[in-house]
Length: 379
Image (cartoon, rainbow, N blue to C red; front, top):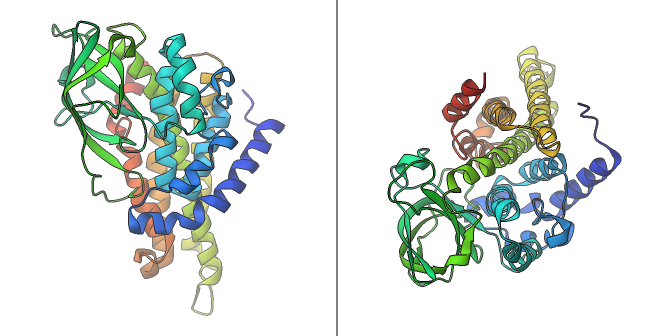
């Protein structure tokens, strides 16, 4: 393995970084304060390929390699955690199952609209109230065949992007007998009768990335909206989550990088006892640890992405990357606030927002505890 980026990847990073610095980062504070999705910036992402990272070029996507996809999410995280999460969920959780397991008709009719932004940002509905990480045993949302339709009843929680687009990929129980072959992924248009999207959750951070409860009351969708093979939903979901964890790891690296840069800048400017605090060893050690851990996390993310691109097993690597990167981001953001002192606790300084945004990373797409279980099973 060689993690020296090639010329194409370096140019891609520069292009995405410039876009984020121009269109995303300047509005990060406003997005958080107003709990407002940055629709203007997201509309401009399609021509760059940021809405089709997981979609092959044949279906209108960017068709970038997994390392390049991770680079894009990292740069978005550097600019605005809220915007990055919405785009990461669209690409890694919603577009991915269609691209990986969808029918040819689904790929041809839906993926181009998702990659172009015409269909907005798609969502994946997995978690249910009271079930948490127990997808197999805790899922009560059910889909029954009636004539030429699936009839779906149940409820989902913490559904990112539910209000932002035309599609919600839904995990539902299609076999009441239970077991690992009882779940299926079904594509549900958000305009379906009986589908109710609750108001945005009031969250600690990532306030510009809307998250909703979703209820299904006799929602009817055609049988052909099944994604892949009936009963394969759990296996498909776990495969999708492996890729999504690379994205969350990359996002965490971006958040940490931003907090680190703000801390370095502040440490050079702020003076105590007649000299910049950057000259104090206590501050230097926090910054040295941050620089080291960010680079280590970035390389873990790249390794997982590289394995994915090689078609090799990357489940353990993805969990390792997400576990280390997300817990690292909390430490780095915490110390960035510490370096800022009292100012770091103020909403006028970006490290306060970044710290709140980073807190979700060890929870979403499998908590740190779940990642440790996954890693343990593989060793």
